[in-house]
Image (cartoon, rainbow, N blue to C red; front, side, top):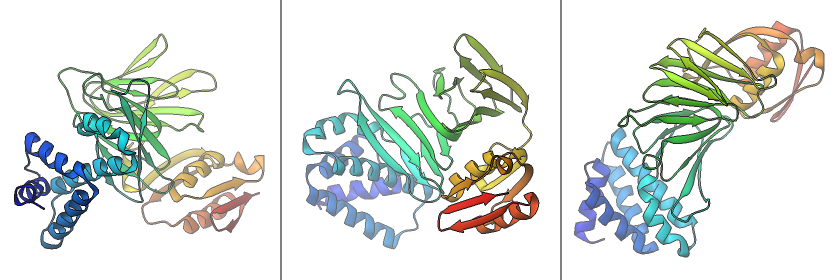
Length: 321
């Protein structure tokens, strides 16, 4: 590796590289597989002799995402990669492995980035505008590579906690299957899994606007809005638990049905829970999870509390009355 490129790489790892320097470094890395291999070797040597800070790790992971996209696409798409590389987000894994994919849609000048947090894991995503999103297990976030330029719109399926950066008055929109959440700078949680009947938004700081067709609902901190997708009915209540608790593997469920709890546990522990009777599915209970429980410990507690019978075959779990 040429000495000037090596120095740029070091500045990149230290998190102090300028945009022009970063462009020069990326141009070198993009030239050939041999250059990419040299860069990865340089990174390995750096990690072996340095205590890597979080900003440095974020910078490296941002470039890793760019390299991954370059390597996975055929050569004919390199020109597109050059245009959109600056829009790649920083992905930090909290647990497991997040899957990042790129898909072309319509114009060659615009593509989409999709981040998926697999079952049993969570992921953290830093968006190009400085906003941060944490995705819960089994969730997907999608946004355009023109994000921050054309708009600040993301599409969510599942649950995400958002800390939205203010950006010259530009609105930030979270699109779900039930409604849009519009904000300018705030902290909130949205749960919109495709197999859940209810879509909820809990607001911690700032203010958000819920748009549902012609209906508009303004929220204040400490409020939770719930949409029943079966009836189209909205309810607004006080937040009864910390909407961010799942970030720390904690959760409180009050008067939840066993059927709904089974869906949540299936996502969190990457298992498939099958309830074999309507009677068992309708059982209601309150339960608190506090970070250390294994799935077997949770199932044992469920048996004692609900009087149900649980059998397990690897990742398939069966609950009967």
